[in-house]
Length: 267
Image (cartoon, rainbow, N blue to C red; front, side, top):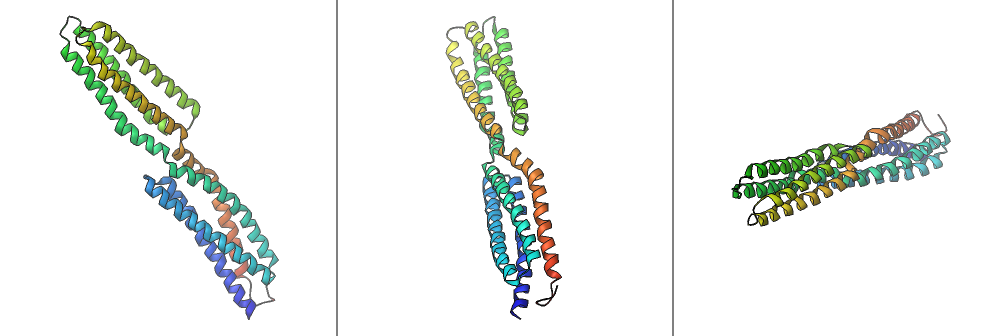
């Protein structure tokens, strides 16, 4: 009778291990897909707790199968443990990346502070043009349009950079941004030599806005280069998906084998 009780408990542990494993995989996926730091962290914690529950079930089940003398089922559990160990290592890396949210942070920075700095640059230059009443005003207006367009081009390049996973492609986008920055700065230098001396000091706010814009752009690029959201999603849809299926298959085979067990001494 004691062995029958152990068998019932072994079946319960195997079933619970599968439930907890499914919870872990699902919570991990939600951590990757979350759109806020708080949600990513909460889902990652949920995944880790479910993973720990699987480990407890496995430890208890190993002892149970040993006591029952079920070598076949013990082998199945060992196979699951091997796959689960690989899964845990991969999932930890994915969750670490997911909670960083570097692509989301880059996107928020691009839509927020970067946009504000670009607008400040435009507004400073337009104020300067309205002040300049010389015969060269048309030339100054053209240079302002060139500088503002160059900054807007850098803004446009940020979105594909944030979404890009290929480093060579990111480098090409960064080269285009550097070319646009050079265009904007050349325009400012020409403006400085073109406008009247009493107007020239008004270029300082525009230069400061451009410097701030490029500093923020560097932050966007650094966050985008880290690529934590893109990388965690790729791993989740690739290696993790394969390992998850393998682990679930191992647990289901173990459940099937235990369900065929009858009273002690029978198979």
